[in-house]
Length: 600
Image (cartoon, rainbow, N blue to C red):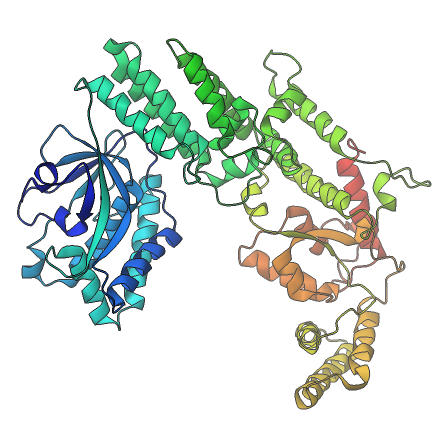
């Protein structure tokens, strides 16, 4: 039985997982070629596989086999060795599952089995028995999958019989129910090593050309691999090694969130982040074309390349080097990230700032980026008296412009300190333009929202020594008791309490207009909705607490609520810490205009 896979299985057949477990004999070895991506299954895929097998063994039916998706392989050079062309994700996940289930056997029983191994041909093979997520990106995903398998088994610990049935379906060849791969062997038409490699890659390309699960960059990688393997035969392995190393360096850089989120506005989970690099070269807008548009561009290049494909790879590397240059200068990073957030593709940013082929120095590039941003800002609505654009902007009619201006205000503030704006944190959240001071009109209807609001106010009032604050706190507690007893706001008594609190916290405010930019700031939706229409003092307290807990608060929003913009020479209101008054609003507006005057 030692050579079962070579001697008895047909080239297209079904293969029980148990047949890959060799006991004391030499284990089967599955090699993952370099043109395939590493392990990238998400937790959902792992859980789906576990649940499917669990349901199969748990159901009382006559089905004897559960079929996994195809495993496409090519015969290796050594005994029991196979090169995996398709199916490495499920094959690797199955190995992680087997490693967990064999721990449920006693020592004598476990010795009857020897698990197959998975090796990467040109990348570092992770230690499957001692995974470290910091070793490389493959180990990171493998560790997440392993943890999910352990968690899944722990959740099923009370179903010992079902777990035992599952183990037997995986490990025992004579078990009534079996889990099987669909086994497909690619025949070798030529024994020459190079031709054989190319044949394997072409099969991989053909199998996956139209699949959603593979991205453009993964297929493009196979094209480059084919060319580097087939050209200059005496030096082909050197070309392949160099290409693999360069690809790996780029892939690691794109896996860094601060790099990815400044160069891309793709906030959903993407399979391979390097797609943005090839979209640039192919001038593809990922929002308007099919996912494989860039691949088709490179496929045409490949088809028309009579010999070397190296000049195309050099073009890709130049684009990557340009991205890296943008990333390494904090000011360029911030401006590019802002333009990407506004919807510009990297290739269009480059076209907008590089007027000639001559490489710009950093200062000239920064000025060009500022001019590009200025051209994208709509400042058509001016105040007649002050001639300033945002004086007349209002929450109800100019929200998108206000959001853009407030983000640019933050960008320029980070530039002053030569810091990177954290796009990786900013883009992972949804953001509101929030009123700094509470709105006068009460728009709360549901009782639970009124109760939440009263609790927030009471929490602030208890630290206020003023007699009026003590009276308000007493009224608030009485109102809570009333709501608890009656479970309703009879006669709308909440309105009187709301108006009294509003008057107390806003007694020093001169203007009544709350929808202008001097009373607006950026906050993530989670924080904003947690205090709804609360007074300034409550909002300030919540923001400080979130800041302490490591929640990202934009720098200008933080400075505003800490009253950094209201200097002592301006008639400071810092002693009046519980209120946001006219002095604060004017100081904030002046800082906005001073910071952004170039664009206005």
